[in-house]
Image (cartoon, rainbow over all chains, first blue to last red; front, side):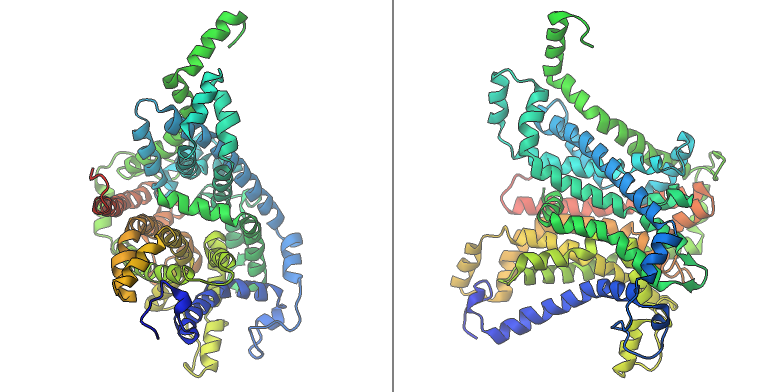
Length: 287
Length: 310
């Protein structure tokens, strides 16, 4: 090994790179991905194979779609998917609209106290759902929306708006003031500036915020578990864990199929917008 | 609004160009939602903690009675202890592994973008659904982990991962670490990528070893982002609910009950809203402590880097 260093990694010998880089990385990848592989394999196994004592559990001999069929036709699963989609899409768009306006006001209109408001938004982001679900259950009950999808649509923005606003504030900050000043001189109103200049320039930020918000609402569990009790109003995470588990007999095949299908929409969305997703995540952390 | 002529239009136009007015207008939707469904419930939760509210009855003010009861309640004390252990252990492991993974991914690698995308998968899929996969992996009878260990000759009977208090604690921590490491790794990787390579070259010319470069270049420049990432990580871990709820429901013998799961069990399942809210309220000081700790960590670093020390 030469006296140089890993900062200039091209000078490293191959065996050293294998031991210090490729082997640990491979172990990380295997551990991180194995549960997904296990989900897929289990969901394709017939019950007899699942409970067989012999044979290689890592492979499936006679793959079957029976678990998926059961899920789609004998349970309320499609209904839960539809609920989750509805709730996620509506609360995401509501939050985005409110966040764009709020972020623009805080970052660009710079009224009195906008700095304090910015800090409030960040603090609101730090309030965890785990300390809000009990009072929120009481509130949704009083509002008469307990056990409806509406309860989720109005409560999800409480964690989506702070996140989206914080993220969009960062994006708006990067847009030069001169553009707005030019438009003001040309007689544009503030609304026109927002719609015709700021928003087109902030499209990457809007996509990041939107993807992230959609994922957060799709994955939400505590509120959906607390506020919803009727099967036809449940979301996928709650439905799978409360209705597919019957007594002591676990239908592992169907459970894994349910987990897999429930993860698929966010995984597909993520696959298409990886860069935006990562930008959203790191952008929110970096500021 | 604009029912007549250009005078009204002009007036409206002026009003809408007034920054204070327009700002208030733009903030209104977010403010209504956040005040009504975030700030108000936060206050209501604290208030409920001082009442004997049950599901279906609003309850009477009973002062500190809930808290006095909790202080003498061994299950609550155990859950508080569990929460602390869970948060501390999982956060330390997540930080160490996350930083390591970030450093690995920051090396010159083929298919770097694809690798980064794949690594983040555990973080983006619904936690409840991946927790079900872990539940199956931890099954007492059919666990593939036990199967492998038996075949390798390391153990002679299947491990009951979630049946024994100590093992159950370790198992939920492993699942939490699995879910949390990608978030930390990818966030820290973003921080690593902002460090100028010339700094490492300068250190190399001065004869610094790999460890010295990590200690004196990487770590100081990364620490602001470490502080933020770890604040979020600690916060998420401290308030974790889903993993525990799916894997153990707080058992065996309450060994994995966290304050969140206990407050759900007592407040919602048991219907004692007041007591559940008191448990949630008891979490607030710890959360504040965690936030303040990392906030001041951040300030110190900003000053070290020559920024304003406010």
